[in-house]
Amino acid sequence: MTKLYDHGLSQPPAGAGCDAARPSRGGEGDAPVIVRELVRRDVKSLTPEDSLAEAARILVRDVVNCLPVVDRAGQPKGVATIHQV
Image 1 (tube, one colour):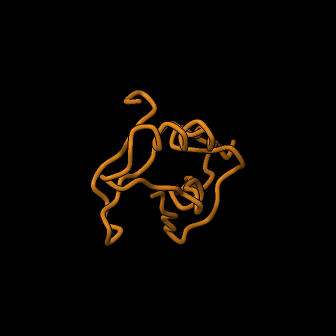
Image 2 (cartoon, one colour):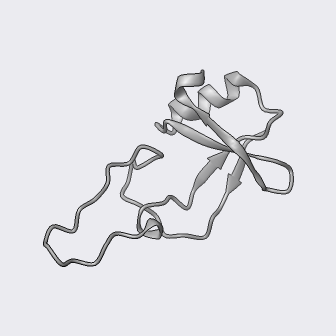
């Protein structure tokens, strides 16, 4: 079963995933880019009980290279990557 794991943070540029390019603000002296400016809000996650086929389907469908693995309480347990499937 795939769960929507909402971290409550701002959404990055369309198509960004775990491997999103690091943005640059351009000029010297600009404020540093902070994590909340990069992360996705609509992150899909897996549970330890999900199948490898389900993980692969989501990774390919959503064009991402990794997915968080969370327990029933939503606590992080690890990360599943495209290289594992």
